[in-house]
Image 1 (spheres, rainbow, N blue to C red):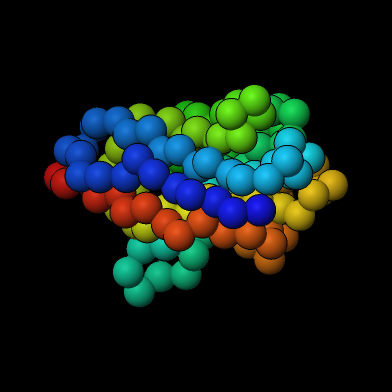
Image 2 (image 1 turned 45 degrees about the vertical axis):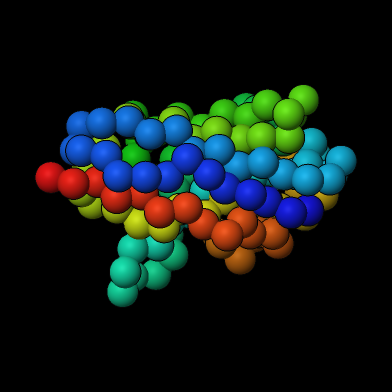
Amino acid sequence: VQLQASGGGLVQAGGSLRLSCAASGRTFRSSAMGWFRQAPGKEREFVATIAWSGGGTSYADSVKGRFILSRDNAKNTVYLQMNSLKPEDTAVYYCAARRPGMVVGTSSKDGYDYWGQGTQVTVSS
């Protein structure tokens, strides 16, 4: 599975961005997906995860109620809609996939076998 993340950019606080992660390979549909982020000098942290079916979403407390994760299996793509962005959301955002057959998401980065290249999100105050 190869993952290509896009959609990052510079936005003012309170604004919105939508990140996309396009996956190659037919096994995408049987894999749970996740988003993580890493700010300068910090560990990579969990943002959100979604089960293979499109249900079973889970969010970090810091983004709950502001971010929405969805997927379109017909397009092999997951989307992270980010609303009410804050300066502390500034980070490189990475999408990740679990190996085929792992249909339920996890907040542990060790549970993901495939990673995209990351896309920068910068929120100005």
